[in-house]
Image 1 (tube, one colour):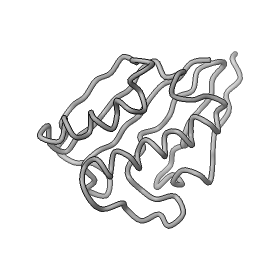
Image 2 (cartoon, one colour; image 1 turned 90 degrees about the vertical axis):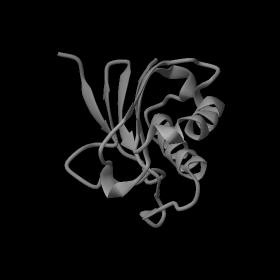
Image 3 (cartoon, one colour; image 1 turned 45 degrees about the horizontal axis):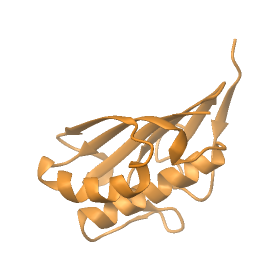
Image 4 (cartoon, helix red, strand yellow; image 1 turned 120 degrees about the vertical axis):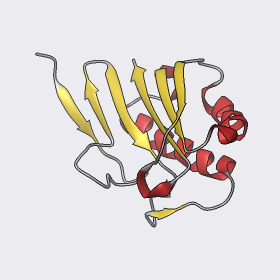
Length: 127
């Protein structure tokens, strides 16, 4: 059986439920969805969808780093939006973080997200 490690960092929001920030199995890092919580205050970032997406990406960066990886290791992302009208604005920020690596991606609009945020992003990275 491949070793499994729970990844935690104080540089990303603590889990708000019974889950890990990420789980490393072999060379694959499974990152839980990040929402726009400021890890130092656990308060939601307010502002535009771009502001929220920026915080989400910063949180993902911290989790990836804690797992010994960065955005260049990301192979797949799931993006959840409260409204597809936010797609272009979210995508502009997303492109700055993920554009060079061009991971596979699914983007969907959902009926609701934790804490009523407008964006959540989860990813899988491989060494």
